[in-house]
Amino acid sequence: MKIIIMMLGILSLSFFNVVLAEPIVIKFSHVVAPDTPKGKAAEKFKQLVEERSKGAFKVEIYPNSQLYKDREELEALQLGAVQILAPSMAKFGPLGAREFELFDLPYIFPNKETLYRTMDGEVGKRLFSKLETKGITGLAFWDNGFKHMSANKPLRKVADFNGMKMRIQSSKVLDAQMKALGAMPQVMAFSEVYTALQQGVVDGTENPLSNIYTQKMHEVQKNLTLSAHGYLGYAVITNKKFWDGLTVDQRNLLAQAMKEATVFERGIAQQENDDSLAKIREAKTTEIYTLTPAERAEWMKALLPVHKEFESVVGKESLQEVYDIAAQVAKEEAAEQKPSTNKKK
Ligand code: LMR
Image (spheres, rainbow, N blue to C red):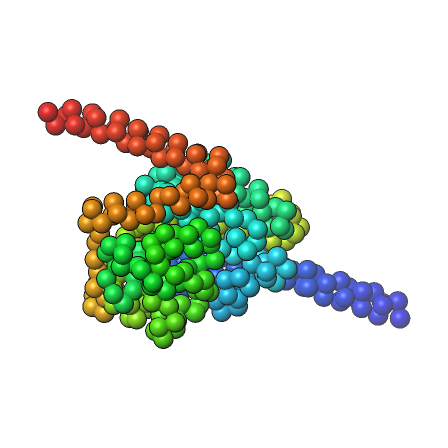
């Protein structure tokens, strides 16, 4: 009898071992296609984590709003139904973190160097610290380049926007941007944009080229203006309770994989967007137009006042920091060019 009880004990112990050896599942939900910078970087993260943890973690990726739409996914993260998201910075307002909308200000980043230094410096830290009280921990910032305008008519002069219904993300800065152009902004989840454009619920939209191409928006938009008037990037975030509940070693493994996935993501973003432009061109469904310097100057004149208008929302200190970083980058670039100009002579 004793032997049977002992055997049963051993059996149940090994059963618990098996149960304990079950992987920790990380659900990573996002709204874009798998073949975008965000989609590919999520896959990279999965591959690194699963390889290095030797099965201790399983990363399940749910692209294309398969699990949740924009707003729902943030609620799901807070509730712990998913563990990682990478929403665009324009989507943090409903969480009560409008400071992220700094990144939506038109023409705020003159180049990628200014952008990276902003994300990786004090501004980025400040933004992530705002999330902690909301049960969210910030992990990284990912890039998707500059946005361009599309519609079923050419958008060249500011007057061309008059009365146009333009889809925007849930950002007050983007709302003000469209109004400053004379358009009527309409907030809409990303997953609904294609149908809304197709059915004429909205007349146009703005997005980086990789999103326009992978969502086939170019098939329902006759005109695309390469305006690069604004920026689109992502904050990769996790549920704080989940993160704090991991061991130090587990957190280190995930943080290192995220660091490498971030380098990978930033490394492919420009190329992915360039490739998308080539494919949109090939599709011949959309007339592509680049603003002339005079047209760009007119857009800037209409849009730059949005910075001042939103200074107190995005944070005066952060806004000034971006301006300072931009000035420093310009100074360094000018200094770098000097020797080569001298050499030429
Ligand atoms: C959008 O909603 O327009 C995009 O920002 C979606 C995304 O995550 O790139």
